Image (cartoon, rainbow, N blue to C red):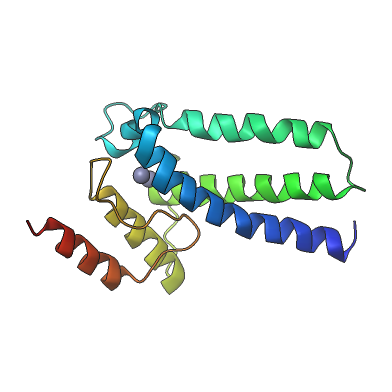
Length: 155
Ligand SMILES: [Zn+2]
Ligand SMILES: [Zn+2]
């Protein structure tokens, strides 16, 4: 492990946010809506959602990257960045925002508040079209999102 490896993992983690925002916007709210719809509907049971298949696919795609490399190779650190993103996503999106684990974690930092509010506004729209804020680590200012939603509701 050297500085280059750590930077590579961090850059990968940030690139994942861009890629996942794009995938959420154009795949999950596009032809992949069939899996994602379950996540925008009112939850009937506290168990698994069809939308969790996305996490499964991402995990399955990352395993070969580890299998084909070792910690002395750049690929292993790219795979670590992807995994780091997955863990952050699960922690912030599933545990903190959707409360899928019984944890009493209430962050007060303005950044975390904004992330949470923005994602609740994403869920304010139950349909494939017309949602706002598709990112998970970055969220636009909440007021801008509210204005965007108001504009879209107008006929
Ligand atoms: Zn969505
Ligand atoms: Zn969500």
